[in-house]
Image (cartoon, rainbow, N blue to C red; front, side):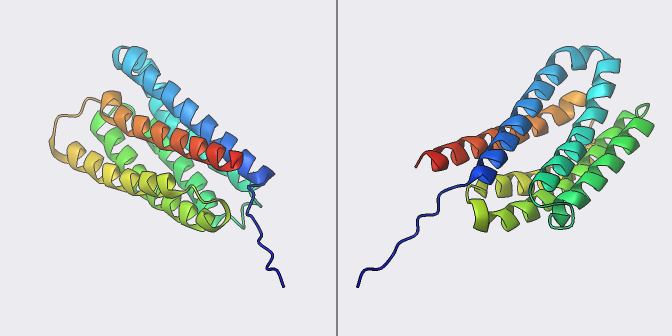
Length: 186
């Protein structure tokens, strides 16, 4: 008698997740480039970028949750989309106060990071390659605490304070996309 071995071959949904991660990574990298170039010198551009980052996160989470089985099935992403949308609006309302913007960004990074961590844990069984998303979520939560601490004491400069956070996000999303690409090729 021979045992049958089933090889878990990543599916089309894995390709969709890979494309999602590539898109998230490239958008974040573009955001970082904008922040460190024109954003640091043109306050109106910095303001747009600071509002756009959590707004993009909200939209991306909604799109991915819908493509991955719906909003009810993907509660952590649905909640993340709501939290990110609220953060974008709060940042928009606080643009005249750089300290408040960095503190709001920090609070958002903590909650969004924990929700990303939950999403990565849920996806681990189906897709693997989520270790970078787990690291990213944990680092986001830690960075958020740092932003809040910085807003309460250290000099705050605005967009250049949060741009490295987005750079790490870009890195983690791109590594996840590459990992899924390699896994798919096996």
